[in-house]
Length: 385
Image 1 (cartoon, rainbow, N blue to C red):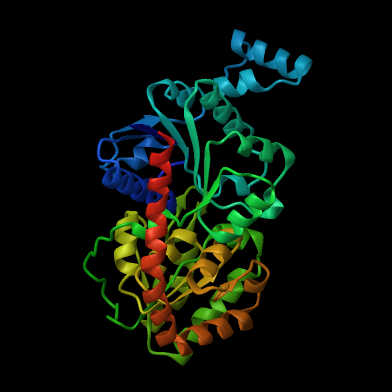
Image 2: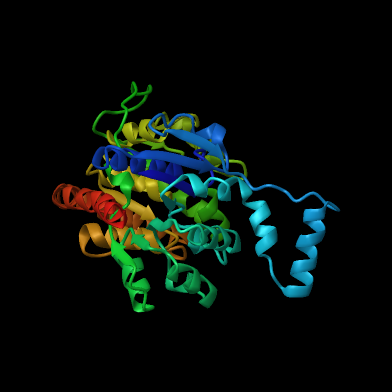
């Protein structure tokens, strides 16, 4: 079986890397004759994922002005309100690969959380036009993200694999019958343990991840996180390990975290992890933390999957749904409005510390079940062929 993954922007987002890396591993483990290919918007960033059989350039192509393609695109859009031809040209790098595979996996877990996606709708249509199987792999979508156009696109999938219950219930509530509940494949991802940096306290280090994405959605959150750092320093003897997980231009965790490091480094209590590690290497550090506080979903998944008590600075349905499937409730997840208040962050942090033993117990009970749900995705995939 030949599988093509698409809708992937590159591995400078270590969460995207984690999805590709773990998905490839479980597919090849369970479907031993499979070949897995990746169409990437930044193929140079994905070379670290060695299990892939090939990485293709899946970046958008520009339509050069005043060429025949440009003129035809403009005419079809203006006269017929039809953008299909133009989108086919833009996404040609992906579309040209469809004919060579059996199944196409749209792997951008939360691509459908960010408004209309006409480009992906067009790729999906081309997949089905060629008679290939189409799967939305490990998605999260909120009620607020849905539209009639998006729903029509989702109806053409042979299989939609929702990675948490809230998305599953919303999609089935919309009448979709092609939806199955799984867990994010990254719960199964391996870890690589590098030497611990100077200042790290074994068994007594709390990880902190914060992102420009969250800050841009709530400006006050930056000061609230600063208050939380002060609180941890004043009320504990723990080291704080600032942990980046996305290093994209304009969306770089490291830049935000470095500012906190410069402000508080005089305390001798902060460690700033480097910005050039792979997803498995970040997971190796996170696994050795006592607690973790994170805004990036896959950084928190790295913590959960190693039974590290975790507080989530959430901004979408995926954070709430994943926590609900682990704990039976949206445990220690703060919404985008809540993280503006330093008092709330400090209160939730204190709650996490007070419940440390119970949280570890619940995680040790739940994570094996969640990991089995991750593997369910491959079972559903095999049923398609």
